Image (cartoon, rainbow, N blue to C red):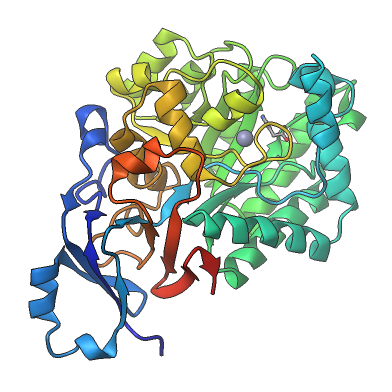
Length: 424
Ligand code: IZC
Ligand code: ZN
């Protein structure tokens, strides 16, 4: 039995309470429900009690000695961070393409010449389960060190039935064996693989008729995603792929308007996607439609930064009433990072979001973007005991002292997995 964990004296305990039923929008994204001199009791993997030091000292006066006590004086306590959009499971690296981009080549040019997603696909197809597991586990350890306790992970570097299944099985094994929880998304339609270059419709037939039914039958994913982008999949093709997923119980997500405006946001709204992600070039009409349809915008400012492009307009989306979440987009081509803290920093500096809004976006709204808000994303009684402690006195400082990993302690499912900034 793991001991109960009692976190005490937090200078700020940002609970994010009250948002489990629906994502935070508008002014609601600034409400962090902060308790000063805050205290939390974690036991049996669940949050048992939340309040001030005085409340908990009274409630646990008899049992305090049983607990592992964490003194969070001078520190910020938040829900475990949630990353709702990653391409976690992949092999290889694309640092050579980074150099090409620094010399003027674009992301799409590299991909159209057989690099980009195709190069990671070749490496991932060639990798064994074990190699994929080992490489991805390393990234998960780094996520944990950055305070992230749940990660969404997409397939899409296989693009054959067996290689897509291989990626999803590795994600499943990581979910079972690593402290971080993984939520899987099938993304067979990540690109048209080279061998289907002359006949993309035949590849879409394969995704729709074989991959989606098999992934759903094996319960290897909850979501279905597509790269809707000029030169990749059209809005019409994307709709067909997402509708096939819906028919098999896979909820739709979409990579929308990343490189060019392509009415991806509009499509996300009309199909009722759980989230539309990227949205760097989303139209005003698309943003309005997303607000109305309740589609969550998952914004990835690290990708814009790394591709040297203009970020999505997070400010405009929040003001239009869209629920915004943020994510690393962790992938080898356009955002090879695990630092959700840096992403929050960029949310402030490049997307005009407030320090409170970016924290809502990386916790409760990120939980909604992966349909987990009933169990994670806030520090509330009954939710999973996933808590991150930062060595800063308040949430403002977390954004102000940018580019630093301030994580001190991470508790996952009630177990201390990071202490003093190191894996236990
Ligand atoms: O591997 O380039 N945008 N997919 C769509 C990506 C970026 C990941 C990659
Ligand atoms: Zn992506």
